[in-house]
Length: 170
Image (cartoon, rainbow, N blue to C red; front, side, top):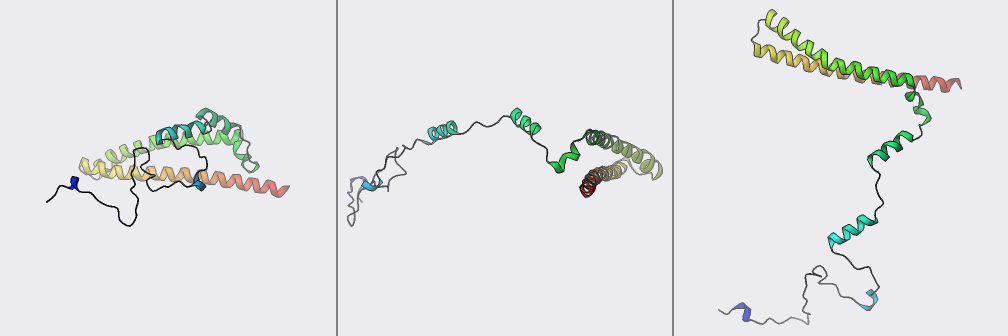
């Protein structure tokens, strides 16, 4: 058995010995010919290239600039009916009303069902009464969210009908 470090290997069929360095590991198979010797920008290492790319990129807008652009954007004619003082007041009123309902109604339903219905009337153990009260509260929350969706849909539908009626008059 001979040591492999002492063996000499020969290249077969006129193949050339190719070696790579740490600078050109990816380009082992590349051979430059005279037709390819066009001056190219030197390829930078990955980190340096990414820094150069970042320097060439246009600066992005910050959050304040985006908000300012959105506020100063022109309003489309078919959307003007949503930006009146009346519609803003109605939207804020609905927001406050449904937010209050989302907080108070489930608490009232939970307390009422737990103490007055499930414990006093049906004489259920506290764990079962709490479970059934919680299920009922979950249903109430879903109903409040569905009511808000319906009110918002109805409001938009009424605004569209109003816009169609105005266009029909003209």
